[in-house]
Length: 438
Image (cartoon, rainbow, N blue to C red):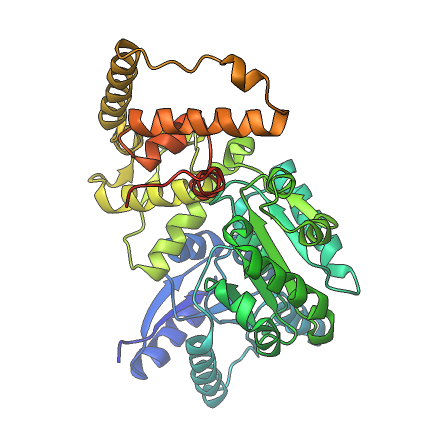
């Protein structure tokens, strides 16, 4: 078993060294910090298994530092507060914020060792670190999102919630925000269960949260099952949170999405902000992702210099949070300097530029070839004589058949040309009776 790492934070050198000697004799690896600034630096670069944190320090008191770690998602280890001026109120405040326990100085040896052993065992049971809603930042648009979720969470009946936004925009973070501590959670990936066993899903989730990442992928039977599940969710006290990047009103109008389900979900809906709408939060997000990779993947902690952060903040993020996460993980693993700099960010952000240019050139050539072959999409008189619905279907069928040939049945290129999500594109082609080559 790996040696447990304990961080001792105290401004009195005699106490720091005494605790170090005692704990080292017990076989622990001990790191010392003389104040809050040193403790911050130590926590940024490594996750200790336990922190012994003094309350009264000259630069910043321990309660304030504990709150900082909570707000920045860094309280992922048990913290035991210490004070020579301890009161019941202080101990209650510390545990309310997130401290595991409280030790009053002078600390008895047996009390110290027992508390350390218990705290370390507790730390082994803590859930793995993860991004949370606090990680999204502090911009006005994110703050407003949190406030709306807080209001929804206070409602006596857990009504279903619809989160609307691009894929990777953080919908699951919002769903997690509504989950009560210790309650069940299910991010459903097997949508077929909605049709075959909706009530069984509820039975296993009593008092918890059910999250569906993309409503647009549900077929008619699954939509009916979800509607039944929502109707019965109050009985099981299950909160249903659904996300979508699709235009549900359009799908509903085209007969591809259940009318009653749409009306039920539209009653409580929120738009997820795209990352491009709150770029001022990117430095905080970079820090949160970096710390998360330090703890989950064991990646070496790397600081990002000001130029690198500015480049990330000024970049475009069509892939939203998921794209930013991938870029940060790439930079942490491939950058060579002590800090991640502007050159590193430029390298990763533009590594696919040549391929994109090639793809664009290929499309241009294909368009020219099609022009030379005189493929016409003019509106024939027979098309104009048809009723609007039939004329639109006929035009769309001709449009897709033309472009399918143009891109040689490449569905990714076809989706880009049509400006549709892949799932909606496949559904549209099926509706028009257009067969796709396997």
